[in-house]
Length: 215
Image (cartoon, rainbow, N blue to C red):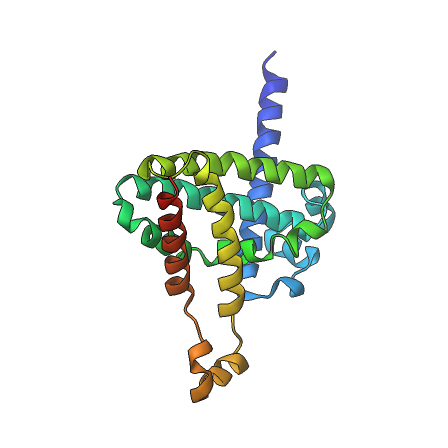
């Protein structure tokens, strides 16, 4: 009588492993190639799946990378929440920045979220992604508020929303090709070159300082 349940369990496990293989393949390819050059064919081949099988799990490559984004975001927030517990309030901006610097895939995907990844998925998928992001951010937002009691209630979530905006801007500005790097070597242009970590930490520190003064 237990046989159907065992078969179902094996089937569910196989599906989970296939999804994980797709996400692993997507990360590997994303480290080496630009998003525009990636195709569902390439993802299927890297994951060791037939293209038709890949479409049973994800309808577009944007849907694949939204799922990668969610897994990267979840891992980052868990790591950050743990780091915040032992951090002094004065070190929060540095802790947040260093944790983000260590996750280049997450930075790149967040920078592409609104302009690329959300443009080729259906409404149901997008709503699900937004809800999952909100659920992930809420504990980290509360952890931040507990470290900084002077922040108004609800400011923790607003912090992460504004940090994403800062991150997108700094990531795009500092993601320079070789030609742009050479241009900044010209003496009168060198002041325009910025460092991602330095600018993000300063911007976060400024926002937190203003937020705590408002209380």
